[in-house]
Length: 222
Image (tube, rainbow, N blue to C red):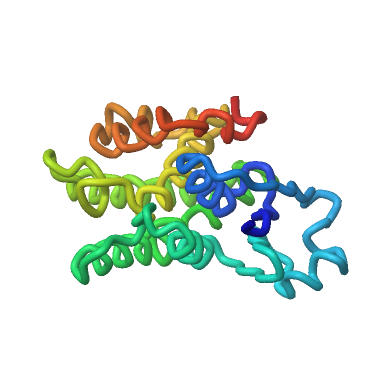
């Protein structure tokens, strides 16, 4: 009997959401341990003993631990070869990893500039900076949208891959940020995603319709 899979994450963590998506879509039973960042549970000694960096997500499988969302997806993809999240051929693997690397090394970066003022500091006096960072998303979303071919429908091929799972929470979080009352008054012009970037919006919608995905949506985002 395989040991139970446990996931440590935050409610609404974009990176933890990726792992949850992969597990939910493939109907894998697992235990989800939600840590409370407000209480500093990710910095508590018992958790730091498992993950010295004090970050989420962290996957526990028996006595084996793996951190970083993409590394976790790689591990799970090897554990369940039928998933094929990272492709089969050399070209498929290259396309998927290329897209995943661009998402994590380029596309998500403006989030780290937007989250502090929008959620913690107030946007007064930072309007131009906020608009500039949303503009980066508009450029990247346009590129992603244009790269989705009509006959493939996914970011890196003709079936769901790690690239799609990596971008889904990012798109949903950008929507959340852009819909904040103070932000919506600025000249962002990025919503609705489904209209501005229809192929990217269709990709996100298809993931929404997959089994068990609806239950993963952070409750405070509704």
